[in-house]
Amino acid sequence: MSMIVRRLSRAATAGLVAAAALTAAAHSAEAADTLGSAAAGQGRYFGTAVAASHLGESDYAATLDREFSSVTPENEMKWDATEPSRGSFTFTSADRIVDHAQSQGMDVRGHTLVWHSQLPSWVSPLGAQDLRTAMNAHINGLMGHYKGEIHSWDVVNEAFQDGGSGARRSSPFQDKLGDGFIEEAFRTARAADPAAKLCYNDYNTDGVNAKSNAVYDMVKDFKSRGVPIDCVGFQSHFNSNSPVPSDYRHNLQRFADLGVDVQITELDIEGSGSAQAADYTKVVEACLAVSRCTGMTVWGVTDKYSWRSGGTPLLFDGDYNEKPAYGAVLSALGGSGGPGDPGDPGDPGDGASCTAMYTRTADWSSGYNGQVTITAGAEPISSWTATVTLPAQQSVSSLWNGTPTWSGNVMTVRPSWNGTLAAGASTSFGFTAAKNGSDAAPTVGTCTAS
Ligand code: XIL
Image 1 (cartoon, rainbow, N blue to C red):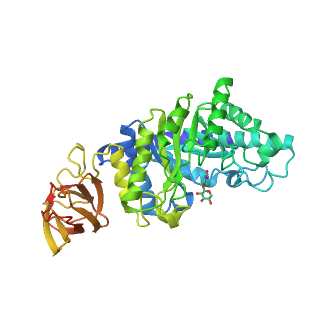
Image 2 (cartoon, rainbow, N blue to C red):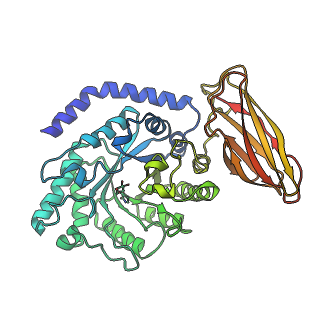
Image 3 (cartoon, rainbow, N blue to C red):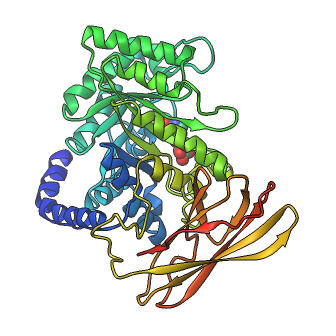
């Protein structure tokens, strides 16, 4: 009954939702490149995990709405959140996320139906038959509520043991129902929402190893027996103990070759600066190289709310500034260079302009400090982009009041906090360069503004 009410009320508001989505689409077509629009240019989605509790924070919502084309509820669709006691479903927080996403024309990934973690305490004491009934009822309850509204569901999450064995992980489902619980969950899910892509999702399966081999064998078996599976999710939580594997692309491709889509579902990479940016580039390039890699999701909008916030693993810092990793992802996605790019015909800043002027502000035998002053033209601007080409030997060790991205020895600098300038007003960024034997001055290219 509640399912029907929800679907009717969605239908009644469909006109409004469609109007809002149109506004969002028109906005992003006019604006300069964002992660979502650049990924769309490659036929992919670019998503983020979202927490309902942060949607009221204006910078959080603005960054989310501007940059991303898909959302995954970080916790709100998990079993403990949606069916805390048997048979009584609560969708309030998950609905907030789904409604928000739809009002912005974003897709929603469903995460997750059957998982050993974040499981309410009533589930594990159940006997085998009862557990099977409860699992299927949970899948039907969730998928029924969101029928037709979820592009992909993580049907089963993390069912394989970590480490070298390739065995299944112990869980109430595995221990009581055996290997067959996964197949049963996928069959139930297919019937519950035939339009949703059904994914198996796991971590430490990003490269070729015993665990990913075991998942591979399962998917191969499912495909050969007609068990419904459409996609495999690679969580991709990386740090120094678990770096981006060198065979990442190869691993994605071998799964794709089984006849499933692959998705990067929970990407985060601990670190900072250019090293973190380079790792993000590797991940995006791997996905783009695999035609069945249909999209990527980062596990949060801002470092400050990351589940691994100490490792600053995301694309925006705690103040929602774009990190070097952001620029790296945008350019790996073929982004045209952000706000004010002259290639953006409908750019709102068509009348906006700026100039960039270089001065050397300090000099010593092995290095120097450079400063680039950005001055707005006859109209106020909300952002600027300046390129600085360094002599080949020189290298930049630090940069302030700007956010650099690199291509060879060309540094593209965008604002960190100082994008907005009144007509004729100025700001500047500075950097320290090592001469490495060349005392030549860098060349500053055209400044673009929006
Ligand atoms: C994490 C969330 O980010 C945290 O907020 C929560 O406390 C624990 O779960 N693999 C998954 C995700 O599939 O659901 C996990 O999300 C991270 C690891």
